[in-house]
Image (cartoon, rainbow, N blue to C red; front, side, top):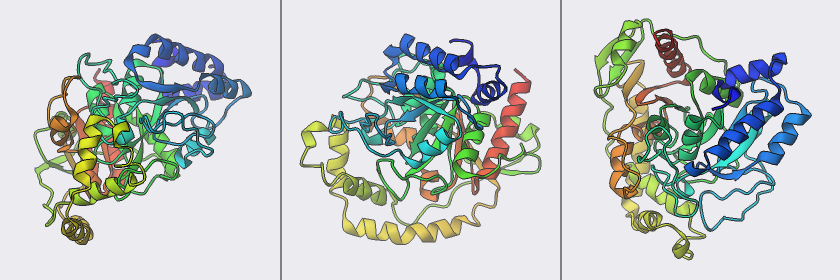
Length: 401
């Protein structure tokens, strides 16, 4: 890892703004790290030439010179955008997704479009078209998904910040697998225009980084909301399951209590499944042979969901969310990020999907924000409270290491 590749996004931006760092050198060092780690299959398309031109032209803003990794689910004008699929292997959009535009306007420099689980429907980033993403932290195990390319690249040091999506855990699961940070904001908080839809009722755009601080800075750029002050003192934290880091939270002044989320009266997965089928109705099943094996299985099942199940789930979802405004009576909820151990790279994704998403998917259904700091997940009803707690936890952890 080069000198600048070891810096946080905040440190790079500060150095570029002060003149202590040359953005061209920063980009070159990160591109060199990318080339050295090409065997990770973390990148689908390098944006090297465009990134260097942008750095040479000069950048400014809160993310000045920060090398940005963009999940290849987001459209980027003039740059190949595959959605991790064979069908769109040569697709070059004419527009750039809103979230990417916001980060670039703040000075970030897109250096790569990253690998992902095909069409973002999967939690392992085993991709039959562009190669499975390798985990640089846990060789032989999956990097998580669907934003696995982002997480592997962050861990390997060839990006300082990443933009991902999360429909069932897709920024948080990779963060846990590769020991970095993924933040899923409140549903609808970050613009999703220009991102290939999976399940619009739950699709969420969120930042990924090597620190909570970097994710909070990116969130500020994406939403216009200020970065909150670190805070855990007096916060009531519900513990959903035995959780790494729980004792540290308590030592920082949080009050821990046992808690659980009330169960919805209908199976909400029906909404997810039918929306996935609708999103692909123009290519599935007409081009079924061009989808990977696990996607074929999922889409075949999605097209068989009974209409009555979808109707009941759509009726229940707003009722359940209204109930969650008062239950459970806590400020935050914590749990491990992963419901099972990180699976082997040769696993069959449908066999591990339910286990990996068991603790992340509920917060896509609630619409609440949730952050993964490795295998610690912190969730709550608003972004500021979640980020404040995560920043306090990170600050305390950094002071003891």
